[in-house]
Length: 277
Image 1: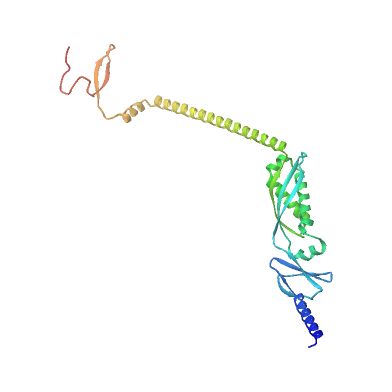
Image 2: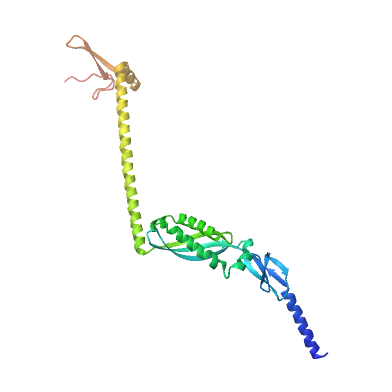
């Protein structure tokens, strides 16, 4: 066979193979494809999976739609003109409805062109209304307000899932001043607690004393109004031993009764009389 024909056949086969390769595409999971034909962008994105296109003149540009995480530093100033440095983590994603729009209207990484400057702007607006001490104490509130403001600025082009404040850095002098103030506040709170505790204990003692005095008064009134109550208490407290009653006459002609216990007297035994000296 003529060598020229062989070269021609080989070239034709190569062109067919390249055309077949160029006529197909694959969009990987987590991506969407933007179809560009001779510089013209298609209005609809290509879903993930296998597809065909015009060879050599059409290209499929993959765009990631999964959630992504990027670090971002931010330098802000508080309402008392103190410099506050933030280290952020931004969680975001590109919605399917914005895949073609972002490719058409924005160059480069959409995070750098859309999200980063708006988050920094939102954070500066929020921190400008708070003192440096408030920023440190209310970091969760700062994050919530900054996230809300950033979402309003970005709109529906991108979705900002969350904003994480990893670190807040102040000047050494300001950190020392805030720490000293917090220590003083803790000591003042401890002193207030001690004072309140002492007041509660004093009030409790007064209430207890008033209760005891009232109980004594009630008991005295009861004894005065009912003398038999004393005999009732004696009976209730009697231990079961019969007392020895000795009668005698007083100088006024009346009799006096003396109660002596029946327990054995020391030095005397049962059935024996005491020894007379």
